[in-house]
Length: 303
Ligand code: 0X9
Ligand code: ZN
Ligand code: ZN
Image 1: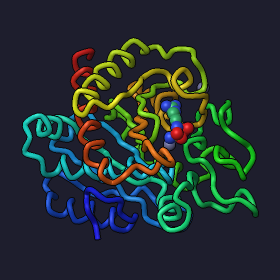
Image 2 (image 1 turned 30 degrees about the vertical axis):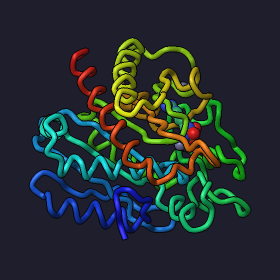
Image 3 (image 1 turned 120 degrees about the vertical axis):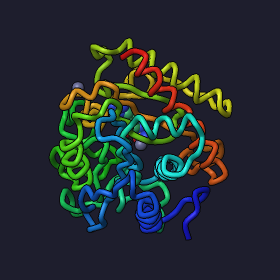
Image 4 (image 1 turned 90 degrees about the vertical axis):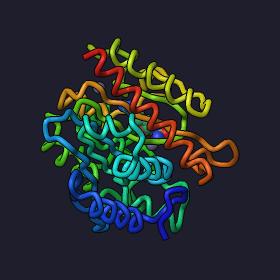
């Protein structure tokens, strides 16, 4: 049974967004981007009061074990559909939202039922011995350009080819149909409490690095103001490590979606950093919402 303050199964999450959409159908629709390797239908929701609005695209839980990312995406969907808060209503009136709350359906179910720290997809087309590829190394821009592995049994295996994984392919096929409207692309991960911007494979700055920094600064100030959570921000290589073939680099590099960020959400303080206690789902989601609203405000101000 579904609850916003718990970690739900893939089916429960898909059923929840379908049901929520049905009760708010005047400004939302469910879309299906395609099927996972094991055949699960990956759905998303579009929330839009005006087709001329600029859009924000959110992709969550591409890494199987990062459950807080989908829990937060689902909480945001519920908030956007139901909130009476003035500031939230403004971003719903003025922004078209595309939210894919749980991209790595198979990996998530595998983590949920068998191996809590599973990261990759669950495909079997690359190796007889080892399952899956790292979907966030599988996007077709500067693929295998560092911080990714050609060895199928490693956790950062980039896949046998760009977009070998049906999940990343489906996401970007859908993105190709909406990118013209998208001003901000957000990839939800955990767990280093960081807001990262491109590139993932080089320290050399993008042409809009000053905007990326100013917007990240505003976004993190608002995040920390909510519950005091410490975050850092910066270029992915500078803050974290080299990672190529990621989704933010793809949308930036191929579609010129120049405000492309990775949110690395809260980590647990005991045990694995990915196993965030459910008590923190709502506070995490609240600070992320504040952060995104500040991000939008700053992006608008900078034009
Ligand atoms: O390694 C990753 O894919 C991400 N970190 S995680 O611990 N969640 O696995 C970081 C990817 C950041 N990439 C870009 N923003 N380009
Ligand atoms: Zn590159
Ligand atoms: Zn991740």
